[in-house]
Amino acid sequence: MASDFLRLTLFLFEIFIFVAYIMVMFHVMVDLFRDTDLGGSAKVLWIIALLFLPIVTALIYLLARGKGMAERQRAALVRVRSQQEEYIREVAGASPADQIARAKALLTEGAITQDEYARLKAKALS
Image (cartoon, helix red, strand yellow):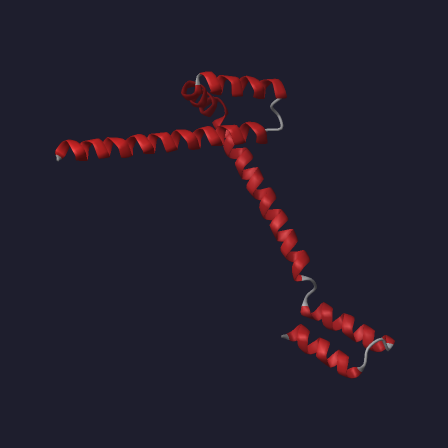
């Protein structure tokens, strides 16, 4: 009974270590391809080293380039956030005051009727 529990605990620990290993390798690979300052031949050398000595190479990479990894991740997040904010501004369109001003200009030009202006104004205010 106790040996089954020990075996299960050891198995779960091994799974945890394996998943952590895969996550580190994934982050290192993503960072390699994200880095625009690193040349192609240097990327190839890192990948070859990761294939033949994965744990040692990953530890060396984290020690040597860990700070840069954080900076590149932060820059990517800032870039994504600015693109998202730009998209939201684009989709949201103009403010209600701008919409009412455009509708008033259309009314003044005679392009829409007073009833259409009232509907556009109500829609902008809702």
